[in-house]
Length: 517
Image (cartoon, rainbow, N blue to C red; front, top):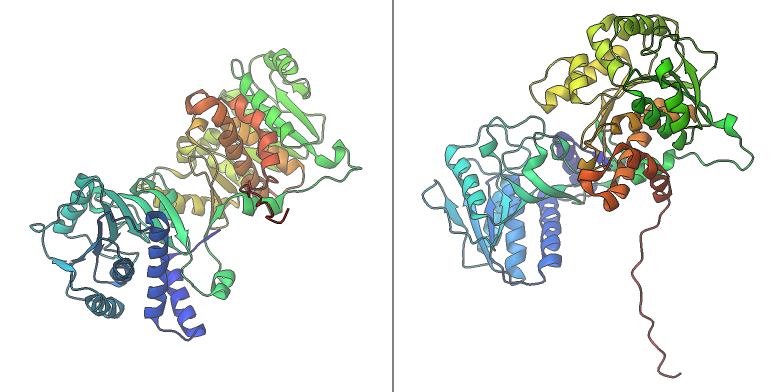
């Protein structure tokens, strides 16, 4: 799914009005009717008091359309105008006149914090105060209005975006943003719905089709995409019946040190379960018996050192190399890594200790092959790009890093974000159960195994992240969040693959008996 910027949504409105020969007010009417339909389907005429708070711009106009539709259909509606400026948009004024012609109960004008209405916790608040065009600080009395919303504990539905929340920067004052239970976002969700600092302002969201011209939506390139089943399914490579293991590549995992052989075991197992034809591991001698016993499908090569890697020498020709898992930070290991990177010509997937080493020895970054995949968690990312002020700064610095070194960075988190070529790809699978030791090694193995099967590095990163999260979503139904461990995620990979082709369950249709029988 494409995530359109606020500028692109505005351009889409202009394009649609011109191509369909309609006024902007008609587009506003469409959007308002879609929001009304969403409410009407769920409420079915229930007389729950609905308090609609409208700003004086276009989002306020949307709110007035919703209010008018609800009133026309007999709902219990109270409308308020949050009078925060002397400037009104044309479409707001048009809809203000229309609602005054619809009901004798005209909207109540709010000018300060002395006249806030009483709202019962069982009522509904519709927030249509500010939209994506907000470009100034929220007035103090309106901040108090938002606090009033929170204090009343009523369900809050935001139109397009929670009022006070920007689409491209983190809020300076958290109190100056509406906390929505649900947000109905126009045409596509917003990037802020997926970032740790801003996702908290809406519990749930849904994208509403507001009638922007399909041609515009199809032809417009975006900087952010949402990755779900529909996006990864076309990437899937089916197997020919006469294929053999040689057709699916050789994944090579380099890592491990005394006490950290579980990391290599997890990565190696997940590489093979991703579909790689063969998996080999290069480890210190102390891990030989452990890996051969725990994972007999793997082939093993050992360093001359007992406890950590000192010289990477292999007799095989792998398709791709996953590097860094449990590697350790010994000086001898760092020296061996430098030598390896100077000589290596194979695609790389990098994780854990190797990312920390690269952060301390940034001259080594220039040795990485183009489209190397790095899979840092936030603290490891900090070694690469430095500290950041907020999530947007983090993403911008990661984009710059990827552009400088021509690499792919997978920022692990609840909504894992893959960064490549100035674009962001937001994953939609996964859950808090993944916040446990070893799951990152499983992801590294999956991506390595997919590259072995001739998925290009970006495809492998997107597909691997999706499968990793989907596996956790499937397995957590039996384990719960607290008891999900990395081995469960590996066990769930086959189920995640099968789920790609699972059809949604169809409701059972009761057969009606023919009266003539």
